[in-house]
Amino acid sequence: MLALRLVKEFYHPHTHFRLDVEYRFQKDNAVLFGPSGSGKTLTMQCIAGLAMPDFGYVRIDDQTLFDSKAHIALPVQQRRIGYMFQDYALFPHMTVMQNVAYAHTGCLPSFVGRQEKERAKAMLERFGIGHLARHLPEQLSGGQRQRVALARACNADPQLLLLDEPFSALDPLLRQRLRHELQELLLQLAVPAIVITHDPADVDVFAQELALYADGRAHLVPNYAQVRSQFATADDCLRYLQQAM
Image (cartoon, rainbow, N blue to C red; front, side, top):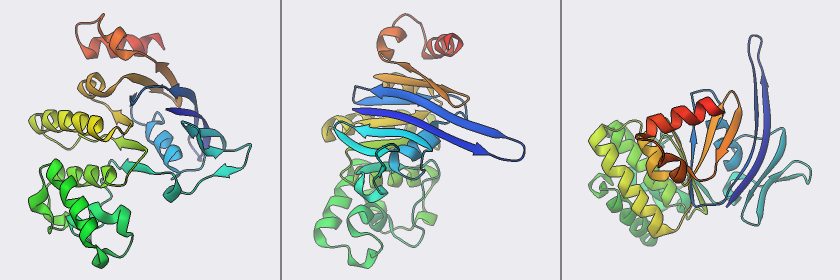
């Protein structure tokens, strides 16, 4: 599904960070797991085209999105990647309906046609927020804003979904419900997804493959389910894998 080699360095007066990762995901759903500041979000930004690597490549199936040697760097809009930001990044001047329809209407929210409205409404209904279609983001709770952001990412006809901490703003019961709703939705849409999370429960649900991050490096766990079966809890399994890196 996804193959990448990414090198990206940042120099600051008091800190130096180097992202240096290389791996290949072969299955539909994968998880990036590790402490904050280890390079997970930067990896997603490089895949989506929001950050430019210093060196490397990004390929989805047979399509090259970025290759430093071949001087290929597709712009964001040509990559067909649905991105759900950790801070939601909803447009404050657009209604929920307009935010979700954005992938098909661009910066002209007043020109949301009938077909785009129907598509956006169907996606909102899937996430249980159809009744919020005319609301503005400032009128929503944190959990509702996160659902809108997820619906917008899924409505972009993506060949790959990138979800950065998709459930972090939700209470435990709602998180559990939306986690399984997303799992069912991904099966229906047949869209592969990469999820960043700090929650072992998310790893259990979504990680057909797992990349463990630490200090800008990544260790690939190709068959997480098989490894997980040897441990009583996901916490025990992940702790063991991190110590073995």
